[in-house]
Structure formats: structure tokens, C-alpha cells
Image 1 (tube, rainbow, N blue to C red):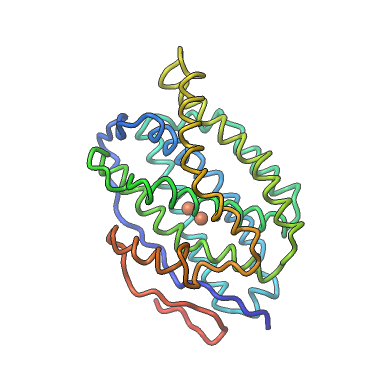
Image 2: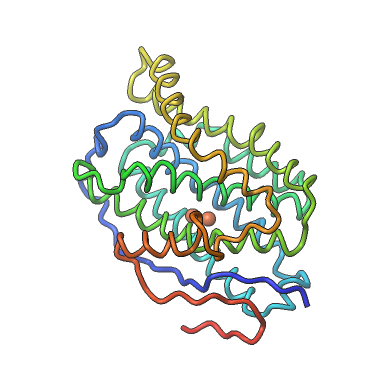
Length: 285
Ligand SMILES: [Fe+2]
Ligand SMILES: [Fe+2]
């Protein structure tokens, strides 16, 4: 049997209020543009992630670990809700048409069609790891989530989404490690992320800047992207963890589950968490 472990989690489905959302929900322009870009990217990125993970449902690794099938369903239930809620948020912020004009949907669909099942899983794990790094470096470590000037309705969406992202991050990383341990696969995934996914995201940032400031959008985009890259400079070490075949967020250390637990408590989503690692486990409902 090919053993794999993960964290048990379920979809949380809180209520959201999208009435009268202030379009200036965040005072800092570069952070507002960045998080709005993330919200616009979410639906197509998550649909790609769901397709990539679901492709493994009939593989031996899932059949040998029956709890994993259920966990993949929860994983997809979470991602489906993120897609729905972010689409609503994007409409409330009146930025949803930017996504319709972007090439992201086409990029993600092309990746599904042209890449192998393994390469799509590797890119999915890379995306989940990127989201994990983004959440830590730009949302938690900057104390963004504690900013009292933010619109609480918008903040609630991101708090909920990031909490669930941190929970299910280990599924894609551990699933990939269980089926493939080659550097070649991960280097190829990183290449596809840098040359296919990131440019489509950068175009969305530029389109948001143009939406708010048609005259100075190029200058604003350059300044804001430089500021965002500044946050990522501090996280090169953790981003590189993607290439560590033994990397596991459940184990002790700085970038780990205890860290996530502490943060979950801070945002009010705390609850007992179970580590699952064999086929004798039944998920509690
Ligand atoms: Fe998500
Ligand atoms: Fe995710």
C-alpha cells in the first residue's frame, strides 16, 4: 500500500453579506489591487485545481486509501464554494467583467487539455503551495487581516477562504509526493506556473489598475507589483519547499500545521483537527 497522510477537514459554508460593499474596501492601493486580482483569479484557478485532483479518483493511490476519496470530495466542495463566493464578491465590487476579458480561463483549460494527468497534479500542488505562501507572507505576516480599516464583509470572505486553503494544502502536496518524486516533474510544473499562469495573473492586475485609473495605470501597476514582489522576497525559502520531496506541513517547524492551528484560532475557525494517514480511518461527519 502507498501510504499518504493529510489533515481531516470539512467545508464550512458560512453566510456572507454582499450588500452595499464599499468599492474602496481597502485603503492601501497595492493591497486592494492585489487581493482583487486574487479574487478574480480564484474561479478559473480553482476549477483547474478541481479537474486536476478529480482525475486521480480512479487511481490506485486513492483506491488504496479509501478515506482519500472522501477527502478529495471535501477538497472539491471547498474549492467549488470558493469559486461561487468569489464570483459574487467580484460582482459586488463591480470588477467581474475584468475576468471575462482575461485569457486566464483559456490558459487553464489549455493546461488541462495539453498536460499529462501527473503534470496537472504537479501544477495544482505548485498552485496550492503558491497560495499557501501568499497567505502567510501577504495576509498573515503583514497583519493585513487585523487592519481595522478594511471592510469586514470583504475581509470575511478572504479569512474563510484562506483558512480552508491552509487546511487542504497538504492534500495536493502529499498526493503528488505519493505518486511522483522526480525533480523533473516539479521543475516542469514551476516552469508552467511562471510562463503560463503568472503572466495571465499579471495581466489581470494591470487590467484592474486600468479599471481604476485609466490615465496612470502603467505607472501604478509597476509600483504596485514591485511592492507585492517585496513581500515575496522574504518567502523564497518556503516557496522552494515545493522541491523538497519530504516536505510535509503536518510535521513540526515554522511552516507547519501548529502554525496554521494558531492562526485558525485567531480568526475564529478553531476546532479539533485530525491527522489521517491510513485506510483504517473513517471521516467523522
Ligand atoms: Fe480555494
Ligand atoms: Fe485550494
